[in-house]
Image (cartoon, rainbow, N blue to C red; front, side, top):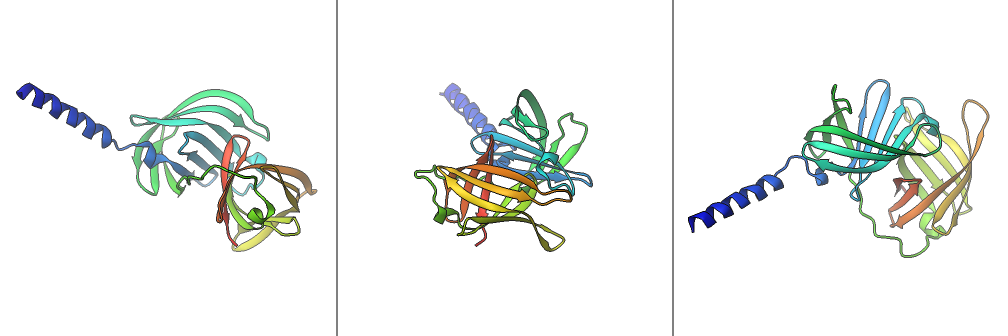
Length: 238
């Protein structure tokens, strides 16, 4: 009888210690941002265990300035273990097979402290958002789902996309309290894809670009999209 009690007590301690781990995947799930005077580092650890990292340089708004990686993640002890399977350094994705381990120091609701990949210093990340769970798409999206103004945190910057009823579109960003238009064009739905043909204004000649986002979920106030292996969320403004 005493032996049985001892076994149950030990088993109970194991359960308690396992359940009280400081570094659970639920705590880490979401999008996080760290920055210094020159660069911005963001990571997204999603509930489906897909992972994305972005590195951008401040005052650079063009997509090629953002270095990206995508793959899978999980927590192992006090480490965030990342397997990168895709990467983009300029404007196209390439295959990768790289494992990286980050040592976790502290996680709270709004802050994450962890060592950088070589362990030389501790970085502080601020939570940008929790990962939102969407229901799967059960029908093809239509124009009525998409018409409106949407905000998206995309490649470390905040953008606003206006999709008008006449299928014209305007993309803008906020800078020093001003709203600056950076792209204009047209939009339409093809199956489950949102396609935009736009001209992007910059200091040089205007650049024409076709943007295609796969719509993976539609809610009245949110739309989930994928660009390549990376997921983003459009939040309805109006």
